Amino acid sequence: MSKLKTSKFSLGLAAGAMALGLSSVGIAAEHGNGFNGIGKNITAKAIEPWDISVFYDGTNLPEGSGSVQAGQDPYDAQCAMCHGAFGEGAEGYPKMMGDPMPQFIKSLKQGLDGVGNRAVNNAWGHAPTLFDMIKRHMPFYAPGTMGVDESYAVTCYVLNLGMIVESDFVCSDKTLADVDMPARDYYVTDTRPDTNNQRCMSDCYDAEPEVVHSAVEGVSG
Image 1: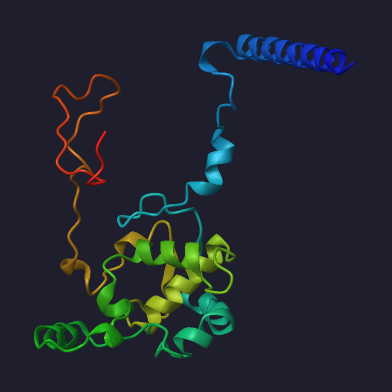
Image 2 (image 1 turned 180 degrees about the vertical axis):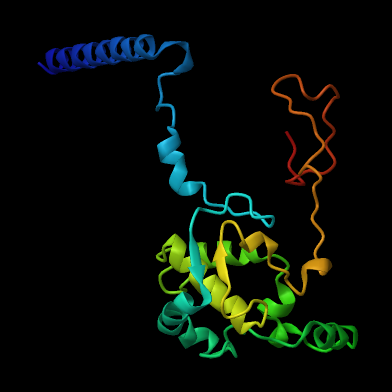
């Protein structure tokens, strides 16, 4: 009796496997040579929400704008609790306005602790990366919740607190890259590739592997 049950169960597994195999063949045929039977090609629409990196030179800044004045209310509501109403820093969080650049450099050369004096006016080389950080990570308790225009406005307000832009300045995808940051000249952009190695997918190692140390010692075969 048990053999009969096992036999029926085995037949069921075989039938299921055959159906799955035929289904996979059908899917592969349907999608052609560009489909390997697992998953599907990602669409540009699916990539778009993740393609948000803004580069130091303003590349990939989203279309939009925000003025210094428009940034005051969202800053007061969402940023001042940590960074201070006037950018002075609160509860140990970073300042928006630190030592002027000459004084900051002098203190660093003297070996003094400059961490507490780092701020937008002396430790940021490019305004677009400030926008990128604010849009991506702020506010601290709800990162990424501010819209594009609001993020431009808060960026502009922060730059004004750091005495970098005037109160009538408007930050946008057209103007932000041209903001003259006090620390700009102290940043060097490394344009070299991450690696000089050539891509290799097969037969990449033509030497005999050498054992330099045994992971387990004192074990004989």
